[in-house]
Image (cartoon, rainbow, N blue to C red; front, side, top):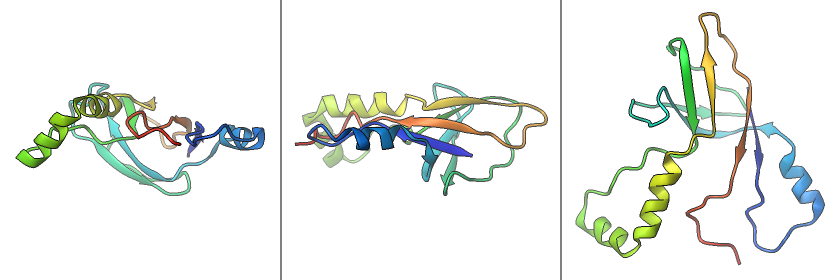
Length: 130
C-alpha cells in the first residue's frame, strides 16, 4: 500500500484547512519508477499505482528506490537541443529532479506486502505560481 502527502504548490498562501488536508496521507495514484540503484543505472520497473495498490513480481532480495520522474535523457533532435540550450538551468533542474528518490524499501526473502508513505514536493522545475 502506497500513501502520499503533498506540499502546497499553489500561489497565495492557503487556509490552514488546506495545509492540514495535504498533510493527511492518502492512497497514491500515479506512476512510479523503481530502481535497484540510487543512481538509476539499471532498467526501471515502471508501476502504475491505483488507489495505493499495484502488484509487482520479480524483485530480488535487496534495497530498491522509488522515483517520481523518469530518468532524464538528453534530447536527440537538434530542435530540442536548441530549445534546451536556451534554458540550460531548466535542463539541469530536470536532470537533478530525476535523480531524487522519494523513498527506499527493502525486499527480503519472504516480503509479500510493502507499505510506505511518500511526500510529493512541488515540481522544482515548474514555473512559479502567480
